[in-house]
Image (tube, rainbow, N blue to C red; front, side, top):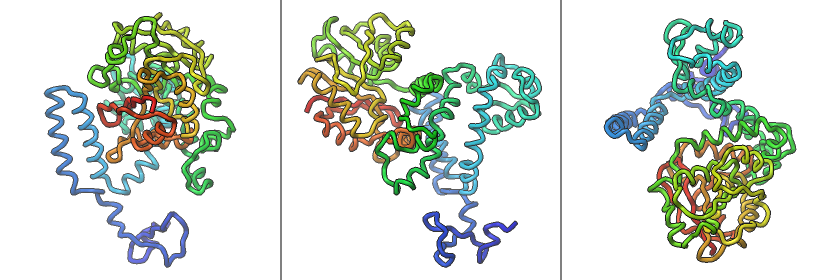
Length: 436
């Protein structure tokens, strides 16, 4: 077997421009030492100092912002020290195999068996508890330990971690079969779909990588309707995504009390209409954090979702209403119409249709439209947001928008943005809009 370097003149490996099999004479040659040298060694001293600085502040103050700064710097340090060869193997080998090991573990109930107590357990004990073949499971466990999911305490012996304990709950573990069942195949089909489209930005949610990857003519949400198990898993996954992040309802994020005080809202007035509010997580949070605030809280969604929400034992103050946001908004003159991660699911044209059905219900000088969405910054974007943007491109033909894109979209619908409220990088903002 001849290596790339051995097959190239002067011991160099050839790189084909644009990824195409161009004529040999047109190919570029790169010193192989680049591929086995750190990506950015000059950044290492600064990053180490940054980690030390924020570590001291975190240990002293236990501040969440300091923790995230340490994480950012630690990731940047890994990328700076990592060689291109190591990055390639990480992308191509570790990520897909870790996912396979995790989903296998979820399906087997491995994490529940491991995490019942803090005592180390052998691979043989875990195989007996899960009914798995001992040899196969030992291989899965070794990879999970190598990737930091569980702790190795000895030869073929492992102890639980905070991660494995979280996996005991379906709310968290459902993320893995969810991705396999309704997300990942669309993402994997994205390169072929983009090539077919001439590398144009997708604009049709019924003709994007999702349909190619899952061999279906259905839009993503219609696919979930046809596959209710995946729908439950998807809802659980999204609840985990939102968990533990700053909320616009937190003190110091958005002036919640101004919604009531500035408009003299009474108990009979519609305060907050949650459009596409799913099972009422946001309104429940609002009621829990602001129990003293007057005004009606109205949850709107499609019939099957509302039916499911009725079984959730929501606060009696939350009114349930069947409504499709592609149709006229029936609640007129509410203080705030609210959508959480709704518009990012849809193309600009579909978003304008949604907004066009809200605007007639809004009362000038009184009603606000509150959009709880990601706003991608022009620089230093966060990896969670950019990852989600690629998922939206693949499975919805939609996008996570920049501030410029949000302003253009909102203004094209006949609204204006009065302020974008943001507390931390990588966390959804609250986009406050009024009639133009």
